[in-house]
Length: 209
Length: 90
Image (cartoon, rainbow over all chains, first blue to last red; front, side, top):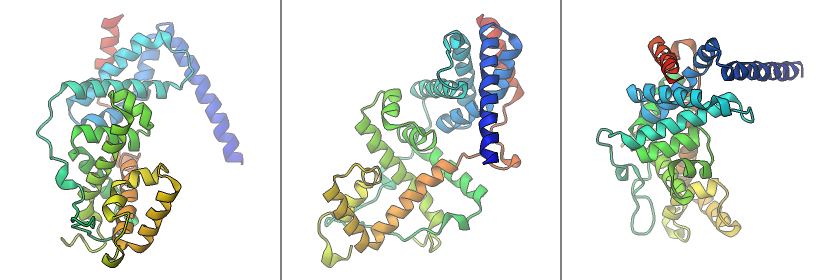
């Protein structure tokens, strides 16, 4: 209870600090711009990297996102948190970049999807996974990140926005200019493909295949 | 599902509609038949478990970790480039 009260108090304090920061930004205070960048760039860079990988493109997207934010700060009314507003801007900047760049040839998705026999049984049923707790967390996170990075752009983007950035289906559809039904199908395929890439690492039988 | 009991829905149906099943988008009667299938079919149940685990692992993969795993420390030159652009855009 005391902890909850303290969190609520911290939240009020954080919102007040944010209001003051926004007022300073809107007044053109240069040190406020630096505070904004130093406070939020790390998080925005990680969002951009999830969508674009580790290269220069993620840096460019963050730079473009801040440039857009600087131009639009006058219209920021505080209905959303600054972090939410910036998140939206960096996702848009990263998606814009994805549309214009040419990526290395990608692994096709089909070999990563389940195969079936004529009667509807799986051709390669595999086996159960071991509980993820048995694996070293840091190593596992690295394996998962590398596997996500191997998904084709169209699928990785949907998986990142839905399952990692936690946007809802309609929002993803709107951002990507897709029908919500297409988003749902791609999400399912992306999860299935990711599951196949993780399978050898997580199979309880050690991935005997 | 054991081959003797292979009826609708098939394993293929179950696996292809897993997302809809998990999102509660299936009509009640279809959902009930899905669950009957899952109860009787260890490979499909394993698939469901690993599909759920995949979603959880994806969402945890980028979670903040210990101080030695701060992949997203921002290079100072990026901060400076952003601030320099601010200077030229005014």
